Length: 486
Figure (cartoon, helix red, strand yellow):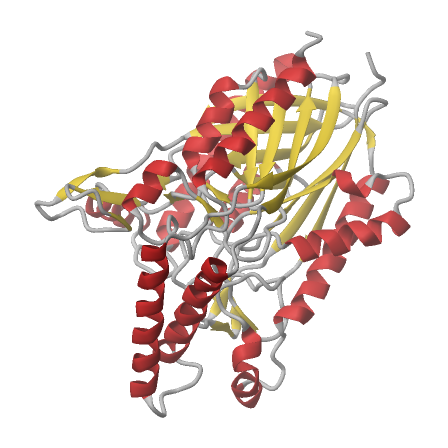
C-alpha cells in the first residue's frame, strides 16, 4: 500500500475582457458582454504510486493544440510532474470563446469585418494563448498546494440530461425534432441521470472540493448570441458554495453525452409551466435562467444526498494508477452517395450566398451559410483524400475503487454505458471532449448513423462508429488490468 494521497486545488478566471467569438452553432456569434464568468479548475493528485492533474474548463471543447502547449510548458515549470498526466475536460458550454482551430466558425474568415466593428476584438488565437497560460498556472498552483488529505467517492441522481435525437417511423433522426406529428416514433437513445462524485477532504476531514461528473453538456443557454456564460455550471457552483462555503472547489465533468441535452423533448410545456410557478421569470430562451437555477438545485441536492454517507468511508490511502493510451481509430470513409449529397449542398449554399448580395457580412444569414459550406467542404475533401486512421489519446485512471476514462470527442452515451456496464471499477467516470483532433467533434453510434442528422453524419464525425467501440474495448481491458490484483 502506498503512502497517503496528496491533494491540491486551484481555480482560474478565464473570462474574456474584450469582444470574442463564441464557439458552437453555425452562425458567427460575437459576445460583447459577460452574463457570468468562465472558470478553469484543477485538482492535483499524487501518491507514491502515481500522479495526475485533472482539470475542467468552461469551454466548448478542449483543443489538442491547447493541451499540447500546456504540457510543453509544464515540462519546464513542473520538472517533478509528468506532463502526459495532465487530463483536461470541457463543460461543453456554447457561450464561451474558442481556444483552438477546430470550431465551426473561423474568425480568420471574417476578421476584417470584425475589426471594423470591434477594434479591440480578442481573436481565437489570442484567447487560446490566454487559455493555455491559465491552464498551466492552475496546474502549477494545484500541484504546489498538494497536501495530505482524504478522498471519498459517491453516486447519486439528478435529472439533467435527456437524449435530444428524435426518430420517426421512416427511420429518420432529427436533433431537437418535433414530437407532435403522427410520424413521431421514439427518442433515439438512453439517458443517464446518475451523478458520479469524488469528494476531497483536508487532513482535518473538512470538505475541500467536489468533482461532479454527469452526462449532459452545459447548454441550457446554448442559443445565446451576444454574451459569455458558463451556463448552468455557474449556477451550480453558486448553489453549492451557498450551502458549503465560498472556499469549496467544484470541478465539473461532462460524461459521454454527444447525444444529450438539458432540454426536454417530451414534457417540455409541462416543465416550462413548473419553472414559471417556481421562479416566476427567466423561463424562456435563450438564457433559460429558471432552468439553470433548477438544474443547479438538482445537482446540489445530489451532492448533498451523497456526501454525508461518503464521510463514513473516507480513504487516506488509495491504489493510484494512470495509463495514457495512443489509439489509431478508423476514419469515417465517405461513400459516393454521401459525397454527392455534400457536393449538392455545397452548390446550393453557394447559390444562397450569391443571392444574399450585400447582406451584413457578420450577420447570421451570411455567416451560417458560409460556415456550413466550409463544414461540408471539409467532409468532401475527406472523400477525395481519405485518412488512413485518426490518432486519439485516451486516459485511463484508477483511483481506489473508481476509474476515469477520457474520450476526445462528443462521445455518444451508449459508448459510455458500455464502458460503465463492463468496467471492473465500482464507479466509472467518463470524461468527453478531451484533446479534440481537428476535423469533426462527434463520435456517433451505428444506430445514430442509420438515422443520420447533424451529429451522426460524415461532416460531424471524423471517426466511424467502429472507433467508438475500440475506445470501449481498450478502456475496459485497461481497467480490468488495473484491478486484476484485487
